Amino acid sequence: MPCLLKITTMAKKRKTKVGKALQNIGKGVKNIAKKAKNIPFAPLIPFKIAMRAILKSKGVETSDDITEISQKFYNVVIRKKANYEIYNYEHLSPAVVSAIIAAVIDYFKSLKKKKERGEKLTEAEEKALKVAEEATATVVAEVEEQAKSQIMSKTYVPIIIIALVAIVLVFLLLKKKK
Image (cartoon, rainbow, N blue to C red; front, side, top):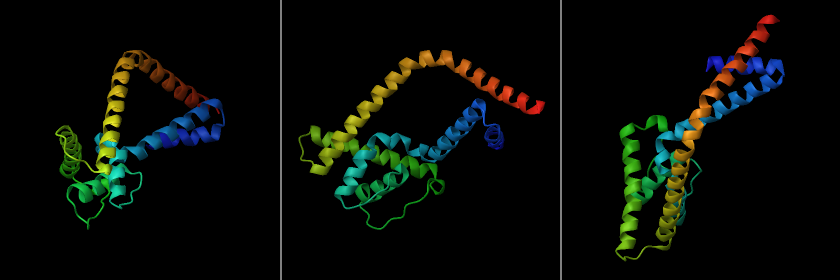
């Protein structure tokens, strides 16, 4: 990150198109880094809306954070606990994260099996299952689309990398001339 900081600092001083481009790249990298903390719970993203709906039906408020939603869902819906703590991802072991992910996915699988057997689902469960199925179908379609477009993007990635390196080199050379 020190290199990125140096580049964005130089970019701010330059006030050129190259400088602005480097500044935008720096902002993008920072945004990705902020979102990266939720990556361990990424497998539950298709179930996020469904989990929030069930939690809301039980009177539990949540933020938009997948880490918080996953833990609350696990504790309130699956474990049926009223008293629990929400931990930052940094304080959760990989084994705990894996257990939460597996339990949530199993919960939605059991809802689907329950529906297939003709058993009665609550209104919240019915809605959550529908949302989860739609989200899963959307993710599958997106993955298939990305796989198809991956062939095209592989040909452009080296060109983009070379262009970015060239921009940085030009920027550094211009700085040295002053």
